[in-house]
Image 1: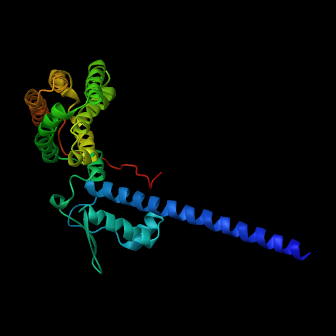
Image 2: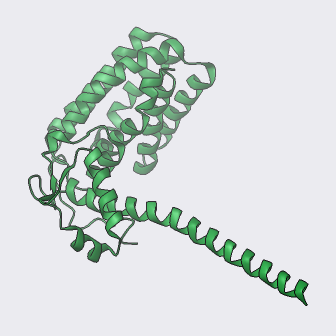
Image 3: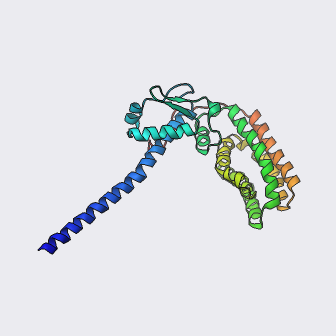
Length: 270
């Protein structure tokens, strides 16, 4: 009889322990997810101009009510937005949106929020300038250092660009792969660490440059061939031609303007 009671106690203890583990695991997974969902929702609102620089975010209580999250989640989200330069957090006064020039513009998440929110002509041109600074130098290193597999990957990406001329989505994907493959071929860890930021910049710029794709294809081919031939001087020249063509298109294109989406669905809405 005693052994039966002991067995029942052990079973009950094991069941409670497993339930606690499951609850802990759920909390561990859910809390960060809710925090990042709130970060995304507020980040999109700030980047899109729905909450303008100089104004305050809704109070902690209002955000708790609107998004159905705890005060801890609200405060953690504010800390993350502060680290990205989007807001300053002050006790008693609240969380205030920073001027756009104080934002961390190489933050991949921020660039992503901008790309489907509001992005101005000046901001697009700033991204184009960054590309002109980074990519010609990167392609020199790629021409000098790329291995056989990396050269083949760059040529393969260019090949997909050629065959995707009537497929805008496929062309953009291949174009992005082309530039990121060059970055990977630099074998420079600092440049490679910029991959996410550069990828986000390409995501922001490419929708505005689809019209330039066909007449800029020859410049991409020249870049690819220079890398294949291990010619850094030709690679730099071709990349500068490519990026200057893109910049000229952005400057003249009527598609480049400030734009506002009325609402962008985020993870916390789903």
